[in-house]
Image 1 (cartoon, rainbow, N blue to C red):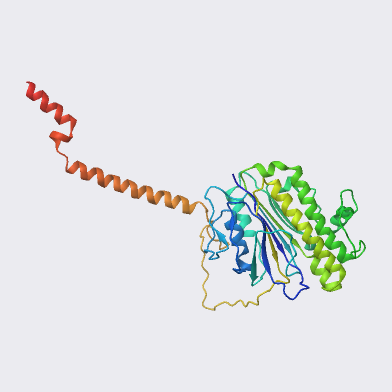
Image 2 (image 1 turned 30 degrees about the horizontal axis):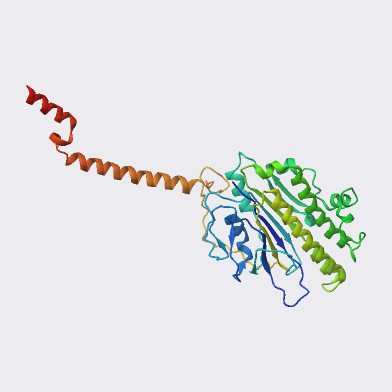
Length: 353
């Protein structure tokens, strides 16, 4: 039975000189084996790591000893990735393993989402990518029906804070204000995490289907608090404590909703390193169309079943070839008088006559 993987990417400013960029695994089922150690993982390899934990193949091998190969017939049922910018690490109460993060470049899970959609298109899996601060939303499959009431824009989320069931009634705000813009941005992102858990509890059937779900959330409230108040401010310290407890509970709730078969990961990074690139074009470059049937120079659509079909056809041809060789060899060296029942019956009849 497919299991769930929840990946939370957390980024916030550090207030302790000993803190470092970390990839922390909060929850993991037994068949997803994370080994404890100090093996660094590159930020650009996070999508490949997500794909491997979900049982998908990747283009290049990930030579990282932190994740061992699991059972072939057990795959995660969902993956939730929460990106929180502006911090180096979080004081999470419980975790399975932690790994240092290097080269924290921006990344997306678009490749994993395309894989999920292409392999499980008939089952309509849940694909949700949300960034409240940028008001960016992408939903696919069952997510359109499940999360249609989820507040997306900052105006909708702030209006949600004044309604019944708001997190303001249960969170210890301390130095945080309900009127400051930066504080409301942080609290609105916490409200989104709460609403996602509530909607999943209302639609528990999502955790029982056979199609994996993918969630990608990006939070930047801590980054705004750090820029406005500073890393040593009481507002920032209170917000980091609130976020750590909220993420811990969020991971435990989703882990339980998917039948204790979820992988919850937290990646903490202060800022993303945007590499400087220069694009060049040779004057001798000729225009080539990789797909003659398309006027837009599009590549042929890759089918993820290609490797499976290729191996089936290859080994079946080899087995049939060996069978033909074996049968031909035995027929060539066969003694009709002893090895063939037809000739044996004929010889007995002749003797009787």
